[in-house]
Amino acid sequence: MEQPTVRSFTTSNELSVSLADLVTKLSAESIEARDRFTVGISGGSLPKLLAADLKHRKDVKWDKWEVFFCDERIVPLEHEDSNYFLCKKELFDHVPIPPEKIHTIDPNLASENEPKEEDDSIDPVAEDYEKQLIDVFAGAKSIKFPVFDLLLLGIGPDGHTCSLFPGHRLLDEGVLWVAYIGDSPKPPPKRVTLTLPVVNHARNVAFVATGSGKQDILYQIFEDPSSKLPSQLVKPTNGKLYWFLDDAASSKLILP
Ligand code: 6PG
Image (cartoon, rainbow, N blue to C red):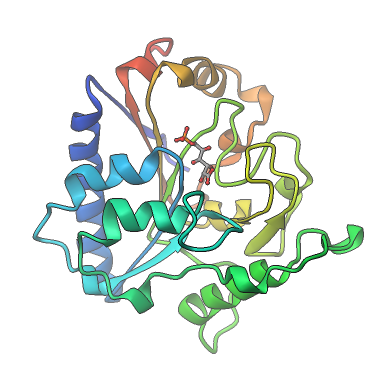
């Protein structure tokens, strides 16, 4: 993996403009090369920071986007905890992405019972979401992992990203594209998440973190590589890694 590009901005507005520049550029390049732009979006503070400037861009071929969620909470799609719902409010309601190209989980498939211990990362919602990825990325071909053009990731104060949490057994998943987690330390507990190999197969991965609450975890991520936090395990094999920070979040880092 080449060296990550780390940028810190005085204000979140400046961050949003620079992030929109990158997304617009990668969208254009991907559409030029492959006639589509495959992107995964996370929840939390990211959708708002992403959409703030991007939703005003007129030069984006929105009809060529294929949108997935890096992780999703297993709640109804119109629930305020839903990452889809959040992204809808912030972005999808403002730009013409065809609805059939926004790939959501089907919360109606959620089983009443917890998956059995021996196959506890498999669940009907996760299986269905993985099938949706297979349809878009593999079609009739057999491929080991999908290659997203861009994954947009947040960071939790414990170093989690997607719904991949420190010390969790899902960090060892090597086969599934989408996994179920029923014991997420961040509520709500039931979620689906892209797995680490999927993240590391992406062409571009961008972390976005703002606010002083992220200072300590960013210091640990950058200065203590031995901690093996999920966010530190994100090392796209053939892709590029970007960090979009604000000065409040990056204040303990020594940046060039
Ligand atoms: C989720 C997220 C999660 C998020 C981080 C950071 O659905 O909970 O996708 O991984 O990105 O927890 O959240 P903040 O940006 O709100 O701190």
